[in-house]
Image (cartoon, rainbow, N blue to C red; front, side, top):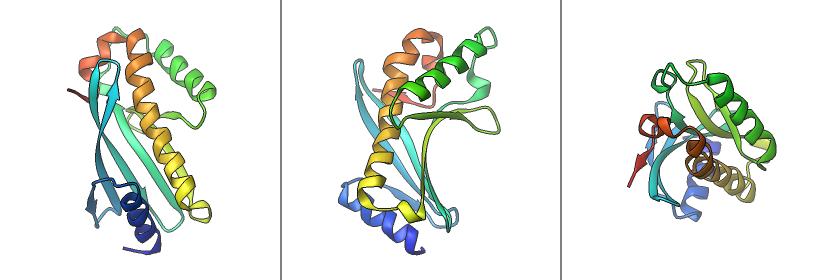
Length: 149
């Protein structure tokens, strides 16, 4: 584990978060239980790092799980609009078309308060997705990569 990995490890410890670490991929894997209006949802948050960047990301729904009858344009417009209006929350698409919520930190800005802010923006993005976006697209609920408890 390099210096960036050690910093992330100390930040996660300071935040009292449990994780698994995959050394081959330089990634911390955090199952995260989030209270939402309907109870709890469990999401997986990945904290990956390179020599320059830290990526905090949580998968929300796989492209192949979005029903074909869904108006994707309307869904993507909603994600773009919420990305614009929500502070620090960024929704995105992977190359495969999966919907994620993510945050990035350059190594020059990697300090505890910034890390905690970016990490919590991903957690809030999951909560917002479940409580707000899913209400408009309820048919996706059972297709997400989230577990409802």
